[in-house]
Length: 347
Image: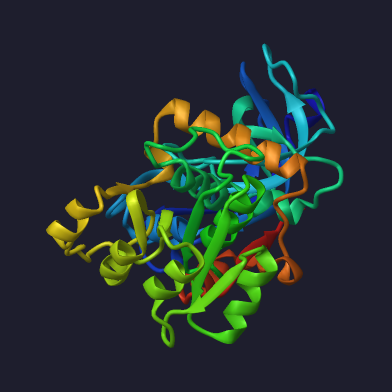
């Protein structure tokens, strides 16, 4: 499209790792999507912990080879379609996943060219806020819920019927997605939190039982509602929780570990884990197999179409908003542990 040859748009970029002050607002030239790509005009982008960790040097220590745009998740509208793309067309609403992983183009910008498979249809009934809040949290939650060797590889209604899922950190973004996906798949869901305010969020997300781990014996309470124990535990802090996890775990159960500060270790009670025939599954959604990622994207899309994935405080995930030019402040908010989901309003 010749009219786009000289068109520019706004992006947030950095060319060296460090504090959030390395993020710079810059103007870029709009380019056409290559074969197999679509160009998306981004409306809302999500901010995840891996965004600030990568920017701070956790992924690319020191100077970078060129400018990088942060951000993995977003929602927007297909603006142009490259050669060879089927199933997507200009004007279609989509949600995006893993956009910046392995490259320099993320979602903290007004437009992005990306492989068509990383743009998934967003139902008309769902907001851009919902679409921008999926990505990393929902795909991580799906992998955690399917990590058991006894469980399904792809979630669907009824896939976890008769199972009990324990979600630690039920007020976090991944915890929120895990509660909603587990409920959609038919599981009984128990969640742990650290305050009554967070308990209200976990209940709003759909957890049937919510425990304050600072005041209650988590394992005892899990076994009160599920005498055989939890079949799957989605754990945000295994270094602190592993003993209680094993006490709460069913025979042959799985502890899915998806988060860490970067320098802690997990001291596993060997005989306790052996006695449970426990599986400890460590998870990083970026590096799961292609088949696992495909299953996760498909299941999240199906849950979204069923109206099972919702955001906003009334659904257990408060939203904190920043403008694109305030991306540095958004990174700082996530690093500081803001409860809920941090979003960038872009379009």
